[in-house]
Image (cartoon, rainbow, N blue to C red; front, top):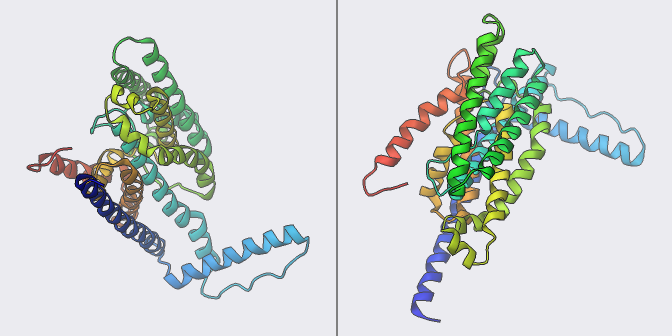
Length: 367
């Protein structure tokens, strides 16, 4: 083994140890953040009560599963006197789903942002670069205008987001020139059309009831998150995230030129399309339940790069953990800082914009 190769392996081993330590710390912070978020709120719940509630729900689930398998009725578990029915309802129907959703949305938007930045070789790329957010806004605004329920609003937003991306890919496929540039320009054009559609819907909406609801949705919030919302987005999020994790080492190759990537035996077109589709899927699922939340997918990957470097084998999981922690903290501020909730889109902009300005203006640093 040559000296240069030995030094390279030594550096790689050190990087892996650093990555492992960073991931363990981030994971511990996310777990601590979840437990803290479950406890704080307008209706405080102590750690002991949280553990009792989770224990009761777990035993109930085991009891139900065992009854289905063995066909027998098992005795009811005695309820703790420390938990009221109101407390159980708040914990399981509102707070726990919201905390988990904040982690899931932050994780997905950050993973999508990191993926887009690698695929498009552009540090300014974000999850809404292809119009997924703009399309979701049109779908949600239309559903609210038709006075549909919350589940239909999510379904309209999710479907419209996917249709928008399909239109972007169709338009970019028929145009000429650089493929990546065609996709970005098509995304800008379709996003403009979607924004016009949203503006028209706001124009014709009832200014007393419908318009405020549309406006609030566009600013982003997790206030209406319920257990069925988790079930609605869990599958598309999982389907989108799994390939991004498995393909993360190939995203490293996509950051090179297409010629270099092909010489390394990578099907550039197939991998690029797969990454774009998966990143778009998780973006659409996230936006459909949270509304428009900016800056997460743009800023968080850069913050993760400061922790673990540019290697996507390390950057992707780090971005997901940092994104989950970031949005969890922002959501806690949103629901606890003032008497009325602050929309998440406002808070992420307040935090994200100054951080990004600091990031790009640091001396001897580049994005």
